[in-house]
Length: 523
Image (tube, rainbow, N blue to C red; front, side, top):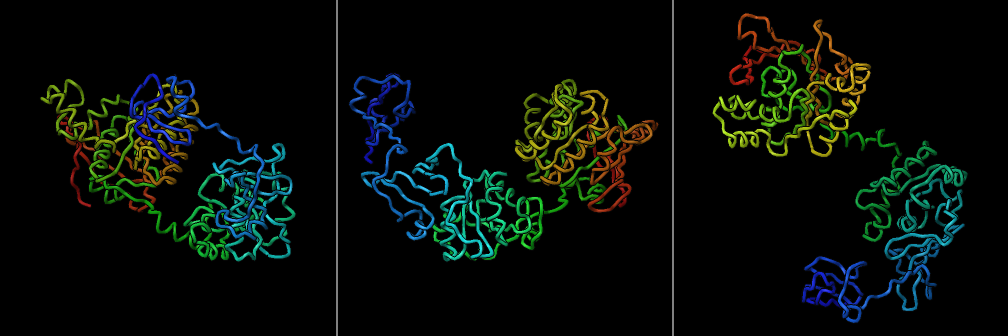
């Protein structure tokens, strides 16, 4: 193919004299208007049709082959290609038209641009692709996802084991019924298909459901399929893996030594990030990932301020990301409170900002520093949201935005969005889903909850039960002593990861700066 550069653009709305690049295959592109050629609907100059000749597209499906060969087909030996009925079809100029795969009831074609089609469109193959291996010739049959892969694996295994291919990765009951007698005649069915894509996993799951006691698989580590192993010259590596297949289990079952060791070295249960508070960090090592931490207290006891104290601590680490939703305040209030901790003076409202002598520029700078750029993710519930939407938002915050911890303040507010009818059932569903989410994604979910006057959790008892850590906070708001009145005490009531229970220290709320600070105490 010859490329002609610095040519005039064919389009009238561009008119560049030298930004067009053209090749004798009939295609081009202008690097001034960034348009490709030819392009339907674009106005061109009169001279274009003679200067830039467009080759007519030829549908090679309608061309009958002049030559056929079994040589040079993706690394396959000629005798293997013949045995499997994989034929390369060529045109008059011996150019590659397509590859043909012979099925008992049809012929499947693959074009050079990787498109598949059937000779008889109305007859979808239900048969396995490959030679008619005698079921008594081996105790084991290998199944691949593609036709090339079946022939490749047969060749890799020394041409001594039966290997067949699925007609497609989307197999159903009809396929299983059609091939049941044949497949069931083998003691082992070994799947050697792609395991990195959804279709391949679904095919493996369907075969496993049909033959759970005899279904095995070949791990595909270095390359995605058997043909790629063959073409890359790594057939021996696949051969030894295929000769020692592993018993298959669904992706939520683990029953092999290799899986156990992988779990052991990849999972880190109950990772914790210090809060900066001596007492809590001693009792629970900080806020913990992999489960729900439940913080409960009566209204007005300083739960939200405590959460801000924790949020600040998380962001003081090197790379921890947090998601937060404070449902009883505006987003600007959340940001101003974060800036208050950064500045050390109260800027929670515009009035407080003025009183503290902080300019707008200083406030902006404090917010930027406090939120640590993209390490803070603030989200909110909308008035029309279903309460269960909180689970989806938490998954989004962790899975897409990378949050390591999510703070929900406070959980009863979720039920108030739709009224309190069925509030207990709603929070039960939310609790179980959040606990599962935390475990699956190895994140920490910190839930703040009100308790009634008698100390019982309001509507959220099940959430408390789902939590791995339960932290109760108390403050004597009726005390005449201002210091006692503004001192919050912590008690660890539940501690599944680390067992320590009991008093966990105190913090003091400074009504002037509106900041919390730890009150020292003996451990």
